[in-house]
Length: 392
Image (cartoon, rainbow, N blue to C red; front, side, top):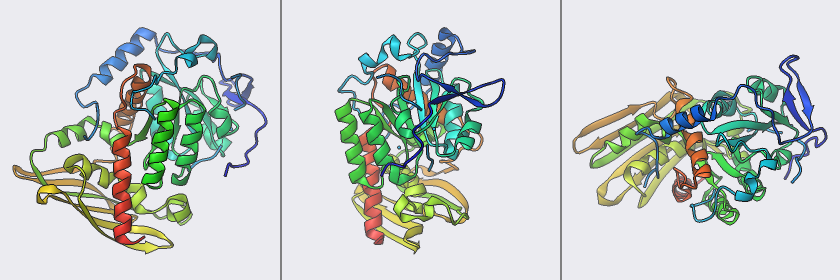
């Protein structure tokens, strides 16, 4: 169901003198102020993308009117992901500087805290537009980004000619709909984790990306952290993984307490512990699980995964605990621990910047995405098996 938002008006750009958003009649031909030189941008992008920790195959029409809602690829490289026709100068793209224009669907906390700053700091992307159901909140988010426009609806944002890629941080049950609509509009998509509500949705999204010839990637930013990548790649002959991610979710109105919106600890943070376990161990051959339920969602889920060769992993995720994040790996050469592997307080922007630069690089240079869709589908299948085993 498409929300019935106000479709009138048009794109709005921040007036730096008054601090208010003013009407802008076009979604292209954006005026750029104070952009870094193309040489500096490309140099920085090359430097960041050449870092040793950069993932490379992890784990194995006229302008529409553009304002939205809150709380995400194809391609495997077999088609032309750059959409040559869409790179015409009359569509307002910054070809000289080799940047893609990003559109953000929703003023989610993670968008304002991490993704917008990451795109702004990137060497190959720029913030083109944002759509949100909360114009005040969205306006505050965009106040630091003079080139960005505030749009009237999600529909209008994905029709903007200078939006090449869409970042989707919406609630989980909206990932499928808006990923499909963005792909159908000719946009590449970076979708927040979990990619879908289940593996069937993830497979539908992957098929749509393939048909569209566009990139779709799940936004698992922790895989772009060079320290985490070094940790995983430095392991030798792991025997057992223990992965935990818990915190106390106190707000009863939070969507994560609503099953119909894709709530529950497993989808919200369990996707991390499943992902890192599979990154280290491969695909499980058997799954056992239990969950503590309330109001139709899992507050805490525990799972035991069995892998070939007698190897194993224990997973724990929760909304009702003190904050806890850790990955412990018992290997033949010793015990290896990584504290806070998923939320990086000392560098909250860095891994996000590497993620958006990697995605933009795959679009601009026809390279495979860093987290293949097959990997995301496999992770969703593991989550489905955990739910089935825990009977929820």
